[in-house]
Length: 156
Image 1: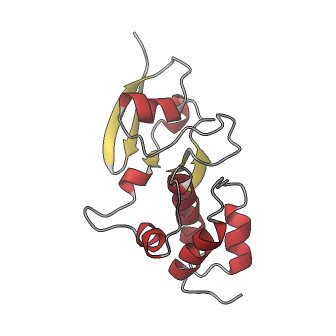
Image 2 (image 1 turned 135 degrees about the vertical axis):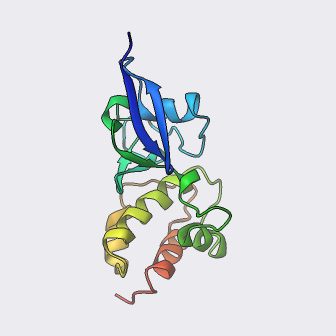
């Protein structure tokens, strides 16, 4: 009998078959139909697959599904509160902080973890916090403006 992996996903209990060596990314996209979490590089370098595991930003492409057993996983689909967008999602819209949108879920999830830890993060802290998330379209300036607006518009 195959081991069952139980965890909370976007506020709801989930149970998946474990032991297959598949990544959390492919379980989210293929089995749970949550396609907001993107496949980018597959090596944890670009940040497109970032999700929150117990509130910490993690690369879903690097995590075996078993790594989330008994944990809480939040994807971009679970960040909003019902029909009310998360402040970062709203800020990305207001600041036009996306172009192709491929990096956007990972950027938002990384920023959400950063601001949960440092609600009034400075510009330097935001830049450092998002440094390992890549945007090929060059929307970095608008992304930083969006995150800073949620961080209370910190000046430094």
